[in-house]
Image (cartoon, rainbow, N blue to C red; front, side, top):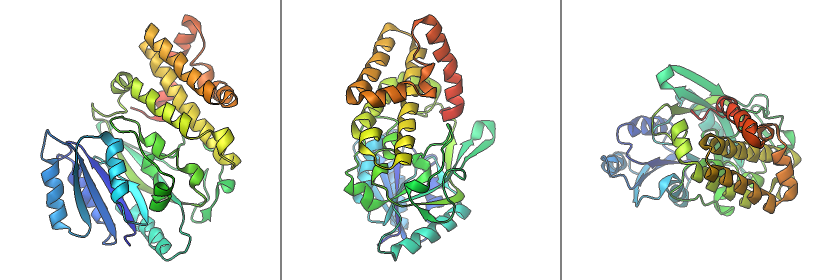
Length: 340
């Protein structure tokens, strides 16, 4: 068995995918790298992926699929994965060599265990290339360092701290057993990836190492402000999937995990409200009311908790003054959630 499967969704990424692949190859020979070409047409992504496969047989696999979006590429990678662990690495990002030495040492020890750790977490770094700045996101105040633990031992997440796809490595079979399937042809599916499986996680391990390097700054990125405004319907779709998938109050018996998941859902609802308030049309206001009605229909008590959260109290006040306050909240949300 391979220690870990890296799934790399590739879409017209020939210009920058080499750096990503090279960083994964340095993790060792006991890995597999699944390059999923998601219907690229503008460049030679497919050809480049297959060249890598020929160069590293037994380690790299190149898979071509019709365009299904980021979620479809992750789904395909997970279906093909044979490693004990599974990690998604976007083709414009990369992993840090020194951090991965520590991560891989821990993962290799799990191969010999009867009950390997379910979820391994490490730090990620925003590489704001155009600003020549790196911002490290760590979890030192949240998780015990260097020991296996459970949700009962988790500390308090700050408002800016969430588990992102960049920071997590799941046990592969856990994802398959919980039936994880991400929506296709939709952005922001990473929120589902780091939310829906959590109630199935029993054991965790945190390495205080800056593992994932997240490139941010391209004009076409899904976290760009203008792009987010144009894709608010997809943000709404993902949020509804999360509402349907897990009710933190009813479905999650671990209190600290339930609290974290409720806060995460509050963050998603805040982003939906803020961007719909930025749109400002009657249709946007109808959509904002609809997403809150959707949550209320799922669980009245959860609706009240989320609606009264610090994140959402100001963004949903009625009248023009409320809208102005909501737009002011955008700049706060921008700093908290780092979406551009």
